Amino acid sequence: MAVVMETLPGFRDFYPTECAVRNVLFTAWREVAHRFHFLEFDSPILEPLELFTEKSGEEIREQLFAFEDRGGRKVALRPETTPSLVRLIGTRAASLKKPIKWFNITENFRYERPQKGRLRSFYQFNVDIVGEGSFSAEAELIALAIESFSILGLGRQHFYIRLSDRQIWILWLQALGIEESRLQVGLLNVLDKWERREREDLEKDALRYLSPTASVQEFLIRAEQLRQSNTLQEIRGCFDALNPNNTLKAAVDQRLLTWGQLLEELDALQYGSFVRVDLGIVRGLAYYTGFVFEVFEADLNGRALAGGGRYDLLFEKLTGHALPAVGFAMGDVTLLDVLQKYHLLPKITFPLDCFVIFENSTRRQALQDVGNLRQNDLSVTYILGEGTVSKQFKKALEYNPNFILFYRSDELRNNQVQVKHVSTHSVTLIEREKLVNFVCNYTAGSKRE
Ligand code: HAM
Image (cartoon, rainbow, N blue to C red; front, top):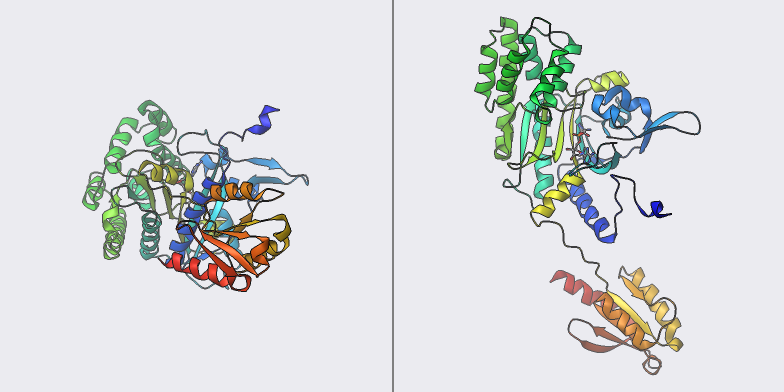
């Protein structure tokens, strides 16, 4: 019996205060999306399994909550929203105005080992730009990501962005003579796990994709140099050391030019100081093709607060329509941890405008007014069931309302109601017809203060 009293591991119940905190995050995310003129969309929480097995990358495939429905279909709870977004846009690709700037807020499910910052059910704010191939889309998204943290009180002292590039890594693998895409993808996965694996395991992993004549030690030392590069000059130096042929050299020059433009754009938008060149980021999802980035808590190697990047090939693979795309998602779990750490969690109260108290004989008139007040957008409550006047007063004070309205039969004979303004203790007799106006004016006034 006790088992029904617990959630599944990695799942959370949200009591009203936690739900209210979650709603503050959702409202903030929507507000920022609105400022950047992104439109909200939604998609099913349950999707055909294939949507994720085909496109999400090895790690997510292993973490799927997948099962067969009663019709024998293989389905999965969404671990992320990007493949669903691709379907929605791909289906109407021709008619949608480009660039498409869309966002959504979703509950996602991944069968991970529950730990700090990682749960099996979590919320994500997903933001994507589709139909724009230039670096300005990356700049716009990084700006939006930064604002999504700023709006909640987090600043440069709390978080920063690690900006990297899968294209640079692919060019680097090519400079090492690794041309086969299967090997490149395998090695990118090895690089992605770098910070979480022991050196010995990294060697073993890398060996699976290197030619028998290559030195795994040398590969890892050179990779470490590129991972540690924090400037465009240092990146160039890593290539120079490999003596690339002219075609490759031109491709690297071109790419570093784009890097320079992106960094300049971010500076112009006044977000440059949040961003660090950091080739240590590769991203675990297989669909990324270009710039990738993750947001981290300042000077701490915790779990990422957000992550994303460019995925220019996913549309064509999934829908047949080639469309460039870039996006990111941030999660609620790590965000709440950081807000808590810096005492920035929103303060939650549940304000109540009126608590209504009545004698048995005045119940009917009191309830009529409850209806009127509620129809005028005021929050009103009263004791359900029966209770003496003194019990009702006691209850009222527990709620700390703005007003206590008291319906006494002798005053009601003159069509009057006692209105107590709780914080000032002032009591006024108000005619019932004027009640809604009186409370509304007072409430609007106090909201303006
Ligand atoms: P992701 O890096 O897998 O990217 O997830 C983005 C964020 O979601 C993470 O940085 C983290 O905050 C949160 N998150 C992920 N897994 C968990 C978990 N198990 N528990 C708690 N939080 C988690 C994506 O999902 C991509 N679809 C983002 C994207 C959008 N790329 C392009 N467009």
